[in-house]
Length: 157
Image 1 (cartoon, rainbow, N blue to C red):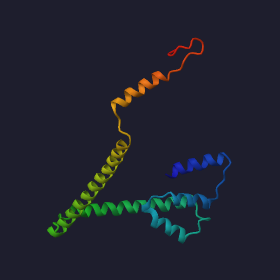
Image 2 (image 1 turned 30 degrees about the vertical axis):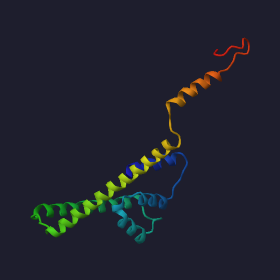
Image 3 (image 1 turned 30 degrees about the horizontal axis):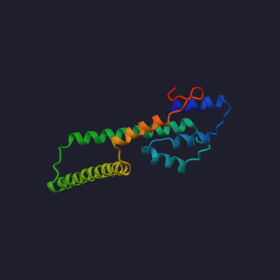
Image 4 (image 1 turned 180 degrees about the vertical axis):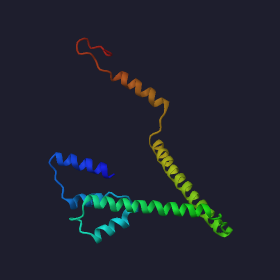
């Protein structure tokens, strides 16, 4: 991310847009993922952003990222080494029941939206029924209303 950011800012500098160090630091802190919110808040509150160098910020964020990875790896190792726990049936049945209720709610919402669409189509078809006789009458009316030639007074050309 830092390399791309540097390339973009260098391109903007070559076009004449100059950023202060504080603006660059704030832009980086703003674009960080949600996992970095705590670290970004700590940096903003603990340091003067106008004097914080980009390299120092990069080092701080890299350290935080490595620490997060180490904690995640440690947690995964602990979960793999611990024996699987068996949940009581009451807890699992509650979870299953909640999932089932969520699925029922989803299906009913989809069904209701489908029925609304069907009602709209039904109402449209009730307003103006289509009959085969109407189609024949419309074609005969168009033959009667065809344009008549200005020169020979004959229809059809």
